[in-house]
Length: 247
Image (cartoon, rainbow, N blue to C red):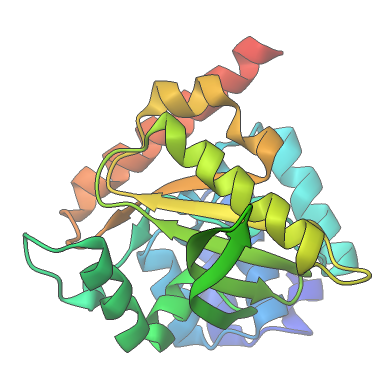
């Protein structure tokens, strides 16, 4: 608390004190220091269950602590601290029926809110970026750059369930960007597939992490908080059980 008091206000500390889980408290404290959140922003992040939605929360406790220590000592982010699942896109105001084009257009109309939900350090670069491979044109839905990760971020939007073919498509985009767009001292591009349903076994069997691909669901309407808490807790437990089985 003494170390934190040099960088955070008393109102920040009062907010953090009420978080019972030590790892969760450390996460919010370190992110708050690095991103210079106001007390209001800190509370909003806690209310939106940011920690439970990050990939890091689904790792073993020892891994989480190591990541947080690294963040504290070097101010260096990792993808597991940046990417979330699910993403809350309720601000888009989409109705029950919409197309991928409608989803993309709504995101661009609400780009500021979308970037806030993605997290700080994301910079928007392009929509429907055309790439040509063997005289055939492909279009990347959304292209961002993350300053601290120092890499291009491809976002591919899917209306329905995650399909096996989505991985191959994303791998093609990432390989093209690595060959033609990546500059000196940048890290390899990373892909985020946003879909309505993840198909958990598909995701597990296809080992997307090894391909620099993240996958996450998006919610255009937020469920009741208790339902959301239950869903996130189940997701965390499933991920940790899978990791322990792999060990």
